[in-house]
Image 1 (cartoon, rainbow, N blue to C red):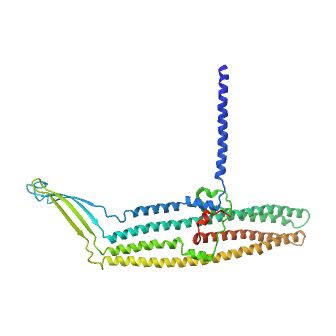
Image 2: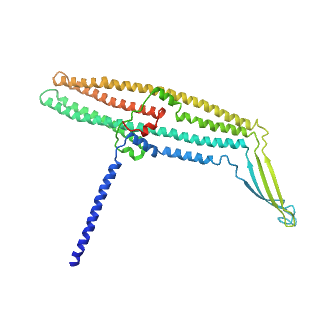
Image 3: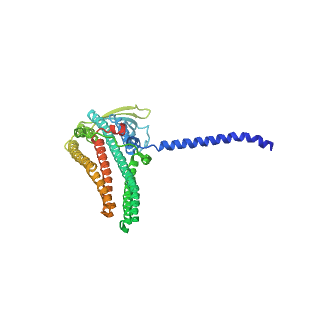
Amino acid sequence: MKSSRNRLPRRLPAARTLFARMVIVIILTGSCHQALAAPLTINDALALALREAPALRANAAQSEAARHAAIPAGELPDPKLALGVDSLPIDGPDRYNLTRDFMTQRRIGLMQEFPNRDKRAARVQRAEARVDVAESVTRITRLAVLRDTALAWIARHTAEAQLARIDALLAENRLFDQAVRGQLAGGKGAAADAVAPRQEAAEIETRRDALLVERERAAAQLQRYIGGAAELPLAGEVPDWPIDRDTLHYGLHRHPLLESYTPKERVLDAEVAEAKAARHPDWALELAYQLRGPQYSNLLSFQLRFDLPLWPDARQDPTIAASQAERRALDGEREAVLREHRAELETELAELWRLDQAIERQRASLLPLAEQKVSLALASWRGGKGSLTEVIAARRERIDSQIKTLALSGNRRQMAARLHFTYGDPLGGVTGESQ
């Protein structure tokens, strides 16, 4: 018993230490959870997308591959080692003997090919241009990732704003249901009126279900670019990106998709130059050391080899013509893309103007009129002059108007984001603060 009492004080500090550690772990775990659950602003989402989007990592690898491929572009081909035996007897007393016949030679040779200077310069130009092509593809992908991330964030933000309004309408519906029951208890109205608020609640719930699907769809699209952070709660508003027609038209010519045609043109120019360089002969140098029997002298030989482009009409000229045709095709493609983007820009600017007009009309006219109509219908119904059906119809129109206004605002923000990240200055959407 004495030994047990002696051990007890030594165990209590250990228990206290363990308890203290558990408390610290719980506090730290809660802090980490709060940190991980920090709200997600649109700028946070854009910054995450630039770090997390798989397409950008793939583009970075492609750019790296192009840079590595450019290193050996201007180098000479690898030399070739030749080993062989010349004039080996295969019959008679010296057959298969490598040392007795003076004509038998064991040969070791080295050959180096020398493509002409113009051809090597064209290959260097083509490799460097392909690096620029890969980097232009990265810029195009970067803008697409920023644009689509912004669109997904705005879509989820809009759906959640509509859901918040739906929840407010459900709370209002419960008060409306109580008012109807009060009217019926006072002997006013028809018995069928008791069903109307519940029908309205069911319709609101149906709208809520559709909005939940839209919210999940937007979150799934956002997750494509930023991973699990797409489920974090949203915070802030969409930046007020400037939309100026003249600035956007000027940015049209600086769009990465159009700028990517410049390195593509350089690639094709290099291919044309390489095809033309094929008219001039390449050459090669070969050195060989030949060993004979010990009673004979060893030999050293060398030779030069030259390509003979004797029939350019059937060989080099068609290749040159094909490369030149591809170059002209690229010019036509670039002009077609420029016109397509110009038409899209005008269409999107017109749509932005329409959305601005529609939002202004909703806020200045339709929303106040819908509220006024509900107030008048309620007053008439409470005074015994109107029907509950008219009240329900007026409330439904108000719901439609409120949800539509939020949807139009979301569409307008998405259109502004699309214009900003396609033709404007996308850096402002990543480094600026939410407004």
